[in-house]
Picture (cartoon, rainbow, N blue to C red):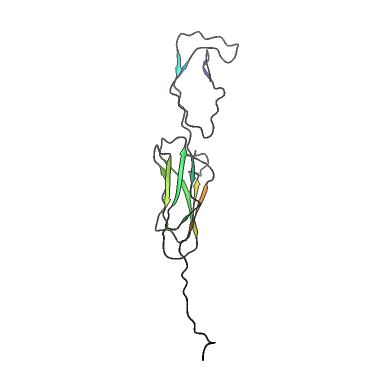
Length: 190
């Protein structure tokens, strides 16, 4: 970083600073500036005995949210979706999720909003399934991580890391009941 003071004020020339999309938060509390030369060689040197200083505040990087889930479960096991955020975790954060469900294995369960508490990097959504004794087709539980807002111009409080959709297959563990029926034979009548 090059820092120069000129007679036209303080010039901060940032050289070669690259911040990756998923870089951790950058902190700077104060910066001492020393009188020196301006960026143009024709500018006169500033002769000052007063130290020049400035407080610099760098905003936290918006959090990036990703999530994982198992490929499949058996009915009776919960479908567990684990959400992780990197970047700023100092504030509470609510996610916008869509749910897709197919099957007869869900208990009476209302899926609510998922929130990260302030300072929390991981949040878990666990959706219980019911282990009944009824044979039924296999199904799935899908979760889609959506943007928080759909209005153009409103900044998003988080960024999504692909994949945005995860699906957990739910396998039925009940066997169909087979009933043997004895039918009198027409050929053995005597």
